[in-house]
Length: 602
Image 1 (tube, rainbow, N blue to C red):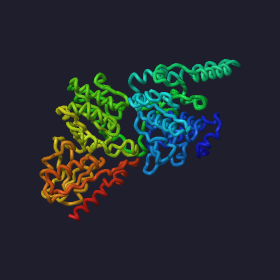
Image 2: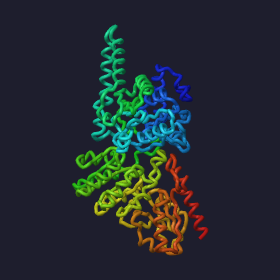
Image 3: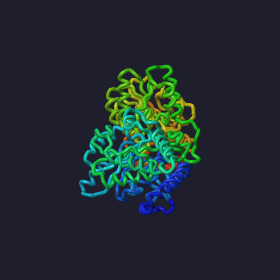
Image 4: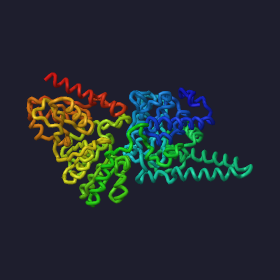
């Protein structure tokens, strides 16, 4: 059946009775493709029926905004990208997140949680201002109800004709936390499904009367839910509420969505319950692990930075009772699961609320604790003002553990860690350390306890296993008596590549940059005027490490030419990390060519 669905109009030709079969085929397509390509599996398996129902009921010109966006795969399959779906997350293939450049039916680019209601409200207000008449739907869930931005948006939606579908699966990446998610509903997926199935089985066993009784009760339930059941949580925002609906029953969803579309003229919340990972037993049993899976053939089982972070924090926490750890809904991903298990009273998962995480850490530090905040680079962007205003301004000893720095590969534009050096370097009092080995990462975490200021430790998913010590200054890894060119390399990828270049090209000195801020002034002052400096960083060039070096050299050692290599003023699309390095001229072959040309022009 799925092969016949080339357009949304093809979908609408099906009868409601045929939709469950289509959903089953889509679910199998997801499982087979995502296990091959990698990507967000469990979240998409949970919204198959919802996505089919939305496109079946609403028109193509209507706008659907997917919060976070990692649950938009079914939407892509149904909007003419199914034939190319095997290219998911690969270079020049289908993006793993909504991308308006890829297809105009992706109504808004999303990749971070909590943005959908604000964006959908903006679309709805634009529609009303321009006297248009399309419908606007925001699909939220997977932790977006723990975001402060969501509540800021809810505070503004009054009197706006729009639909908010709350996909309640009690999960973000891991289990949802906090009072907000508990207050939305006391019903959860497992309990709801079990009770409904028990009643259905009981009634259908009754001869003659069982089946009509079941159908009658189902009709009564539907009518009641389309009334105005109270939900104090949403009543406070003056929103019409419909729920709770089984979000994995496509026929029910079509029923409710059709009536909401045709009859509702005010902001409405449709609360559904779904099973994250539904239809794939391993994902149902462990939705956190299967939230995102590696592409087939990817390196697995290798040591990762998050493991070193967790082990090191557990070690120092066992020695110091003032050490606490904070994450934003990603304990396992950032390496804090071990800390959570060993020191539950000193571990805080604040949900997807990075701004709160940082200011909360500032309060902990002000009270005498030593907080470690573990957040991915791209998500830490959301808390810039809190880092500057709440932590750095008061010079508080908060350590930021910034995972997934640099190129991150297949997640693409919304998740690249290519801006942190720039936005952190301009903040007073803040030190920035950049390990390229696991041993340095561990030592930096321990050394941060001896600093009386905020420290940001920035690292990618994997580092080098070489044994090197962090001594608070740059490491000269391939010294030359009279180098013609000095490579100042930030991070594991660039340091390792620079060492390979030094082996291939004479008179090249490689310096591992372990402290981006402050710069190693002693080393920079020692560089002779017959040497050229080339800086290497997986960060945008604007405001990055290279520009800091160029500015310093211009003021203090002006006879030395400086060339900065990094990422130009652009957003880097999804591809493998190796392909992203090549595209930005930071791979071995490209850098070797660049270095050779520089030396030939000296």
